[in-house]
Structures are given as C-alpha cells and as structure tokens.
Amino acid sequence: MTSDLSALFNNAKKVTLVSVPVKEESENEAVEEEAVVESKKRKIIEEREYEDPSVVNAQTVFVGNVPIGCTQKELRTLFSQYGTVKSVRLRNLIPLNPKQGKRLAFIKKEFHPLQKTITAYIRFTDETEAEDATSLNGHLYKEHHLRVDVAHDLDTNTKHDHKRSIFIGNLPFDANDDDVWKAFEECGEIDSVRLVRDRATSVGKGFGYVLFQDEASVGLALRMNENCKIGNRMIRIKTAVKKPKHVKPKMSTKKPRRAKDKFISKKSVRSDTNDGVMQGRVEKRPSVKLRKEKQKKNKKNHSTKTNNANKDVIQFQKKK
Image (cartoon, rainbow, N blue to C red):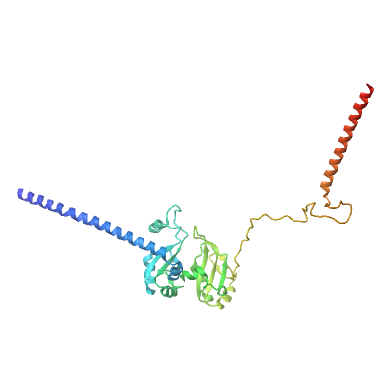
C-alpha cells in the first residue's frame, strides 16, 4: 500500500509541474490573438480614412427588403457567386427597447414587432463585380423580393425613370413590399418597389412607388385605380411626377428702405407754385396740422393772461 501511495504522489507532482507551463502558453497565445485582431482593426480604420468615397460607393451594393432573420453569413454566401465580398453591413435595425443598442438587439433577436425587413450594404473588391450583383434585383429570397442597386446610382438618382414608375397612396401602414409586388405583377415585370417608412419605427407612411421595366405597364397599372385592394384598403394610383426642388429665399441682413413717398424731408422738396403752401415746404398731414394749431392757441392764451396780469399790477401802483 505504501508503494502505491508514493507512486500516486509522484505522479501528482509530475502533473502539476507539467500543467503550469501549458497554462502560460495558452495565456500568451490569447494575448497574441488579441494583438492581431487590434492590428487588423487599425488597418481597416486607416484604409477607410484614405479611401475615395466615390470608389467605395461604386464597389458597394444596396440590398433592400431583406428578411429580418437573415444573417451576414447568409448574404455573403448569396452574393459571393459574383465576386469576393469584402464586407457586409446590416442597417435600419430597430430594437424593441429604444434604450438598447442595435448591435445587442441583433444578437438577442429583439426587434420591433412591426419590423419585418432590414437593409444591407455589401462591398466587393471591384466595380464590375458590384454591377454583376445587380442581376439579383427582384430575386425571391425567403419569400421576399430583394431590391439590389449600386450605391453610386442611389446617390445620383440616375437610374430612376419617372415615365416607368407610378405613385401609390392610401396603403395600410403594415403593408410590405411583397404585398405591393403581388398586386402589380399582372401589369408587367417590376424593377423595384419602394415604400416610404418612418425611420424611428420602420412603420409605413401610407404611400410608395413602383418602378416597372416597361412604360406600357404604367398604363395598365393606372387602369387599376380605385379597383385594387391591398389589405383592407382601396389604394390610389397615379403617375409619378418629379417635383421641383424647393429653394428657400435668401434672407438679406440689410434693413428694408422706407418708401420715399411716405417720408420726405422738408428740405429735399421745393414747390415752385404757390398753391396755399409755403415755398420750400411739403404739405403737412392733418394730424400734424391739428397739433400745431392747438400749440398756437395755447401760446396765445398764455400771452393774453400774462399781459392782463401786468396791466392789473400797473393800475394798482398808480392808485397808490
């Protein structure tokens, strides 16, 4: 028994001696990995600072109507067939708790109950790859029609054609892009659907736009005015009109000048004709005339009183 106990004690010593350096190596490796990750983050930040925004937009693709349960890996695998994906960013996430961050809400999957879709920005290494990826526009992915455009086209608005688009109003606030897509599929091939939403809650504002691939589809869609129902509402359909930009008038810092006819100095105007007005003076306003006449009467009354008082004093002295 004593030999067995001594053997176990010696083995325990060996285990403790061997286990200490293994822990030190694991800690060193973790520190090295953190340093590598930090260096990569610094390189990415430096690259973003020195990159031309026009080039970045040309290499980036905007993806709309993405299902809310979609992840970055799924989008990367979907778009990797057109080239090497450099980055995937998810946007327009609305957390259930407004005080909670969007990243934490995405990890916990705690979104606003009325939000069903999100948007994404996918960047490629080349501009041609981004243009090829736009072929997924209108692709049905998880029962959602994706809207895919180059980010450069969104900034310049060169791709939008008002002749091929219609305006739809009186939509339900909880309507989705796919509901509108199904309603106008019979009119022709649809290029994109855009519903205007509130940024804070992602709830629709009751109107949107539909862009067709052919102008003839617009005429067929206009015939459906007040005959097309989405949800419980009869929608309103009109042609999309490009509204002119509202230019605010420039406010001048200088004070406005007074009209010359109302306020004219007495010295600046001289009348050549004697029409009841003194020469070199402007005819006074009636209120000014009345005030002047009252002042003259008061002066006369005061002068007569003083003269009578003086006469009385002189007569009193003579009597004495």
